[in-house]
Length: 341
Image (cartoon, helix red, strand yellow):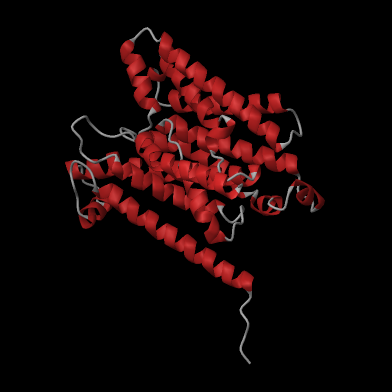
């Protein structure tokens, strides 16, 4: 008599294979990130200088320039990917991403305000701290606008309002900047980049990203149940208010820290969860870890794309992700229109 394979067991094996595949791709892209640049290095050379303690120019390039850039690409991509997956599960809308509830806009406004006031020049921690403060203030404003126990639509509308206000205030700061060079610096920071970042940025952002991801990961079961609808989730013992607060706070910490370090990097939180969702059986909770790995891989690949030599200088990371994400977003919109006919 032949044994019948349990569907859940097959799904677990598929989830494990997907996770291992994404982990392998991410590690391969990490190695490529350490090798590629104005000074091209072989993988063996890179690995040798990572473990050596010499002060040669190549070791400094690998350890002090490329390694922190690679680590930040992984952390930022993982934060954006996991936050996008959690928000899409919470709002039950595949077109959602971290910017929809004003987190990215609030973080950008806080960082731009630090640039404008001159505080960013005082210490390396001021700019990231200002970005995270802006993200947390944006989330607090959403809670005040939406009210306690608000439904999903009200939260979305409050987020759109805060996001629009943040964008308007950011534009106002650029308009009022008395120093054209400061305005130029702010503008290019907003385009997003990982260039000239060091381990001080990694150490500053890492605790907030880890805390944010832990909050998001704690909602895995609730997200799976929430896919059945709010009424069904409440009848099964899911605390919707607490779940919503965890996801919004986790996204604020993770994405706020990411934006404050790198500038605005869009579409990672939109594209990655949508691509990976069919591979996890459309389970929102199971999508969180693959989306973190997929976000890290996409950000690493996009950052490698910024190193293509151009006459006008290096491309910005936010520009590359927008070039990838905008056509994908348009395809989703057109597909959504077709499905509703």
